[in-house]
Length: 111
Length: 116
Image 1 (cartoon, rainbow over the protein chains, first blue to last red):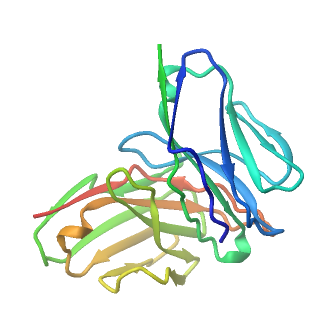
Image 2 (cartoon, rainbow over the protein chains, first blue to last red):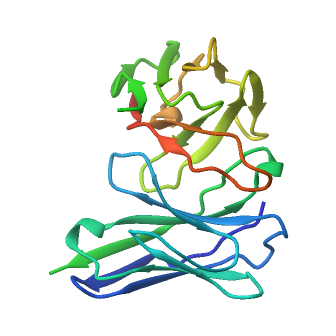
């Protein structure tokens, strides 16, 4: 499974756009990139998944360059409730559904 | 609402006393997972079921066992809990992937285990 590297923590003010970049240099051809969000004392929650280029949903955007060795989760206009840990994961169903969560990025949003 | 339910939310056990954590789902997903998450750490996959096929992660201690009697229920048995097993235990489900696509995992709220 491809290993991922993310910043340990990030700070932002309310209303700003936050971009969290994840490195996955040894991503395999079949691997998808998935991001989860976790609040304290809760289970992780799926945010977005992509394979290449750009994916957007009602919560976030995911930018993946052509070489796919990194990806960037973009959260538009964050609010205090976006304070959470964000995990980047890389994998595919052919690997047996194993999901290895990296260390994650702890995002703190302040007024 | 369809969901993943974990009981109990908080469990206290004594060192060495067997404990069972339960998970149920109303999503009718065929893949179920158990994760261990220690304080300030990322979730660590212990094992997963693809239907009734059990898949153990290589570094999951033998002290941890699991049962899946039917699609809806999955149990985590810790045969002889040690102090180091105190953690949040998360159950998750997903549909099988479509080709290489890994389907979204739906997590339960977790069971926080304390070992005295």
